[in-house]
Image (cartoon, rainbow, N blue to C red):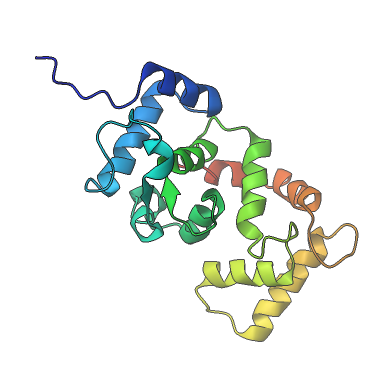
Length: 190
């Protein structure tokens, strides 16, 4: 009796609750998902030292998570949430990702991360190249180059308020706020 493994200390759990949009139960469920992706790498107990910020799972392992597996942007999502942009995630980064995709995360934070996901070249704008990269992912290269450029140019033109040929965060935000289905799809059930 009493051989139950303590996954997190009370202080860790409280800190995670304070820094995320997740409940205690969600955090424990997420740790279990993280561990089940690679039981040989992730320890049962995450209380020792800085294990939550040093034990890292490779991108190719994380994208096998059932909640990400079918998402065409799964690789890009992981890259955005990894501090080094490789897509490899520590538990802390994995938790942040799932927190942002939770139903409890505020709209403005979801829009901010959606912008980062579409900004493939990380220049703080969504330009024609970013838009074409997203379109290639979504259409699995079913459009030819001319069709691709037409769709991307038209999309940028429709949303580009200041006429600079690219979307700023504010322009992107304006488009997303007029798209109610975005908020019903930009989440992952934990």
